[in-house]
Amino acid sequence: MLAAERRDAILRALHAGGAVRVADLAAELDVSEMTVRRDLDALDAQNLLRKVHGGAMARHNRGEEPWSSVKAAQQRAEKAAIAALAAETVEDGMTIAISAGTTTTEFARRLRHRPSITVITNSVSVFAVLTDPPADAAEAAHVYLSGGVRTPSDALVGPIADAAIGSFRVDSTYLGVHGFDPDAGLTTPNIAEAQTNRTLIEIGARLVVLADHTKFGEVGTNVFARLPQVHTLVVDDGLAADDRAVTAAQVGTLMIADVTGAV
Image 1 (tube, helix red, strand yellow):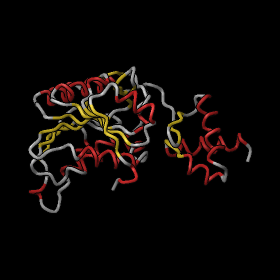
Image 2 (cartoon, helix red, strand yellow):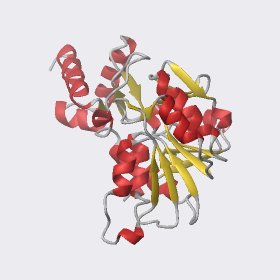
Image 3 (cartoon, helix red, strand yellow):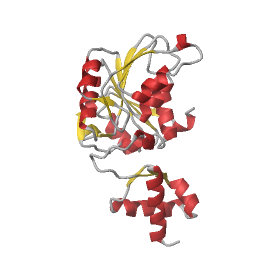
Image 4 (cartoon, one colour):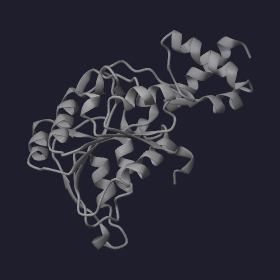
């Protein structure tokens, strides 16, 4: 197979799934992982994809917001590991806010049987996960859902959402992000979601950000917080050592989730 044919195949796989892994591509194309990495380097240089640790992501314009159904299929193992580790930081009796996002939805799954906690959320998906009746309804967390206008990420945003969220005060806000960057900070492509995220941050005594390693260096159109505002950032072990060092220097605590140990 010629290099051009391999790269076309890589782009087709990327278009279908939104992300690709070096090991999977090498097996599918019957070439070495080094050959795949060279192809990814070439495609990244042409701005046709964004190379990340272990693979590549589709390259989006700063104002483009992928649908939650697309994002849910990406980095599943990483999100599971991050969610499990983040759940360990939630203590009995806490009141917390959870933003929209596929990683925060996985996080919410780990809180389904925590009746002593109260959750405020602007996420349709998080609300559904937490209120889908468990075997014993007495085991469920107490959940409030804001109103608002629904975005592609299943977030409820806008003045109604901001007013509802702003009437609460919580122990910790758990936030999913479109991207985190040492210079730009925390960003999203949606300007209304950026404002609602600011409100979620304002009501929390602590800010905990959940983001897989592919979010590092991703910069959306709208900045809603800087990294030094983050008390705890939970990321998976796919984040490169240099990127860990840069991030750890700005956030309060950097927690690394072990993907191989995720359940």
